[in-house]
Length: 207
Image 1 (cartoon, one colour):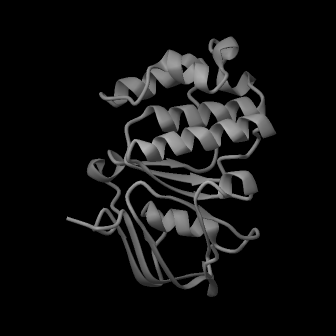
Image 2 (spheres, one colour):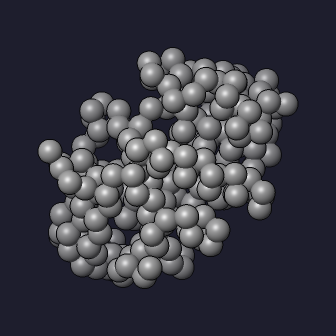
């Protein structure tokens, strides 16, 4: 068993000989929302990649669900990652992308129609993603991420391309996810999103 969803101890990451993260400690409890804040280049995305097992540490320890993150079905069955915009499947509509996500994961958190409604995509459901605006594609990425079952959300700047009103809607959706027992770690520049959880900086806790 584990007492925390995420446990980071003295994490240091160097890229090309340059320190990106140094001696970072972080503990995230079940049901908590943590906003990782700081300027560009401060290591926010690198921290998320370490939590996802996509970036090796130079030194220190990272544990997720009590174990080092691993690129296997057990890990990804509990973790949903939103990073860069995905490579969309040619010829599939927005609806079909969500239907595919629902088919892959037997116990989806919501129906495709519910996801389209929550993310204001009903009128563009039959358009391929590359015909959508930047904000619409970001909402589609978020819809796919939140549709699938998970216990931990790792979100890298989920506010990208979203207007002010939908950023507020996203904050409500993440609050609901945490109320259901999920845990969120997100890198963000948006102060509205950051205030819904505990704020940390790559150099340590700031609030």
